View 1 (cartoon, helix red, strand yellow):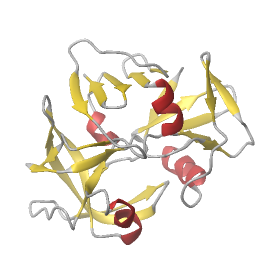
View 2 (cartoon, rainbow, N blue to C red):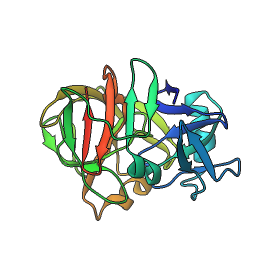
View 3 (cartoon, rainbow, N blue to C red):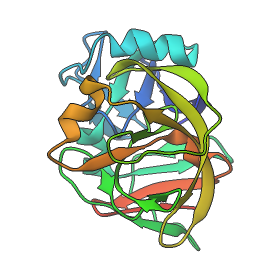
View 4 (cartoon, rainbow, N blue to C red):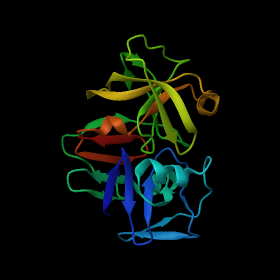
Length: 225
């Protein structure tokens, strides 16, 4: 499948229209009354329940594209997901990447990992390809070294989130880098759903700047290079 990396979002281009590929969305949905779409021979069910408040409209505004739906975890977990950034190719398949960095994951409703440390603080994070940047919840991690820049991020699921923007160093068992990160100052609608899971933040698409390949190879491993 052809895709466009628009404002740090995977946008899949199909004959029916543009879909955001979002691991932070539990299910797939659209606003055109479609039940299934053909993704290069893989039939994706897109008749699920819409999440949040006007996510399609917000995603269209954020990406600058006409978005008609989201591809969520129901399809991604069923088929896997492989993305080649260099050639602009996205496939729903489980593909191993030679020499890849590996990230162990867990969770049923969302893809989560506790392999990630942000500024040296290890936390459970949700892997969210629908998030423009990464977030750290203030109640779990109070960062003192930041630029103090204010920002507003229009999240398709949670609406506008205001916080502090800073560059954070992140590391996994096999990889270290830097990402644009927002410190979320205890926004109830964002934090409350994840209290019981002891989630400390959301690992968004800003971390994939400079990455060539990304693959969800199984329900408990993500690979990237």
